[in-house]
Each structure stands twice: as C-alpha cells, then as structure tokens.
Length: 299
Image (tube, rainbow, N blue to C red):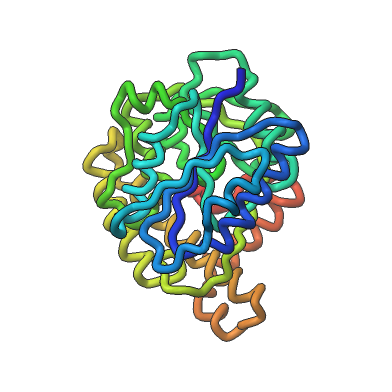
C-alpha cells in the first residue's frame, strides 16, 4: 500500500500555495487517491488560507501547522518531518508546480518498487536515465558525483531518517534543499535515481527573499559549504571548490534566465559572463541530444 506525505514549508505565499495545492489535488483526483499533505507556515505576516479553502481540496488530507515565530526554512522542514505519519515523505516548495503526470510517473511508480532496502529516491531531468533506466547507488557515490537533486524530487523513507536522527541543519540559510542530501551521505543510504521532468516555479525573480538576493545568497551558500565540510566524509579541496563554483554558476544562471524571460535585458546582462555562455550552450545541447551538462554540479 502506498504511504507518503507531501510536506510544504511556506511563508508569505498563500496565493501561490493555493496554486501548488490545486495541481497536487488535480493529479490525485485523476487517479482517485487521497494524499496526506502537511503545511507549515513560518509565521507569515498575512496568512490568507482558512480551513474552508483547505477542505475544498477533495483529494488532499491537509494538516495545517503554524510557527509562533519566524524559524527559518530548515527548522520549518524539521517540524514537518516530525509530524509525518506515513512511510515516505516528499517535499514541495510553496511556489512550485508538479509537471504533468508527476504523481504517477515519479512518485507512485517508484514507491510501487518492491525493495525495502531503498532509503531514498531522487529524480533528475537527465535523458540518459530515461533511455537507459533507473540506477542504484549509495548516497556517498551520489555526493561524490555531485548530482544534487531538486528538493521537490527527493523522496525519503521516514523510518531511516528517524533511525539515524537525520534532520536539517537549522544554521544553514542557503542551499537548504541539499542539506539533508549531504547528511544522508554520512550514513551511506541506499538510493535509487530515476528520470523525471523538472518542477515549474511560479515565483518571478523579485521579493524580499534570500533566493532573490544574489549577493546575499552567494554569501550564505559559502557559509553552508563550510558547515557541510565540517561534517562530511569528503576531504578533497577540489571537490568543495567544484561545489562552490557550481552553486555560484547555478545562482547566476537562474538570475540571468529569469530577468531575460521577464524582458529586463539590462538586469540580465549583469549576471552574464563567459562561463554562463558555456553553461547555456551545454544546456541547449543537453536538452537536444542528452549530453551531460557542462556544469560540474548538477542542480
């Protein structure tokens, strides 16, 4: 029997959260199942979702929590983990939409896989996985290969997280999506990696958030990397340099792309450099031919 919970940390995005929940509800409705969902609001200034709105999602069993002060993303996700009652959990950002058939093609297909030894399942938008099929690796090998999955494509077995007392580092402010990923590497989890399409982000590149502040995010990522190094089994300077460079390029790429899509060419050019051009070229070839991305860190 399938047993998983969708966990959503949110703050000041109640209108976007409704769109996110609507898509989850729609995909659950199409196959006739009810999905447990836990929402934890991190002390939003304006919380516009009442219980009636949550009840309207007929195919979701929603539990709504609220922090009594602003705790931060890591602490909020930890509270979600502690409230999960099902065998598995998957996180979902409050500004993301599942792509079509994500529930059946990624979550249900992989949870139907009969192998109790798998501790985590990670989805990547990598064509070779789609062509050649799923792979099974230890979490240590995944980290060494620097394939870090988006948070919305990470499924964890609750029993394993609790057995090893694995939670998010609440001092990590940027790069939170991969903090749990580095933690499980220390325990050498058995992982399944599989193909899935990327989730769609609803939020434009604006607002007073760390993810939309380029300089602050770069600074906080460097702090996060220092914390990961302290508890990591990897003692390799080149490895951590590649992690840092990969994050910086990824952040620059996201800012460039979002400003370009919005039509703000002048702002987009602030984030352009030769490395970014190379990344854009490799990504274009990757999408067409299935080549590996030129970026050493695949986010």
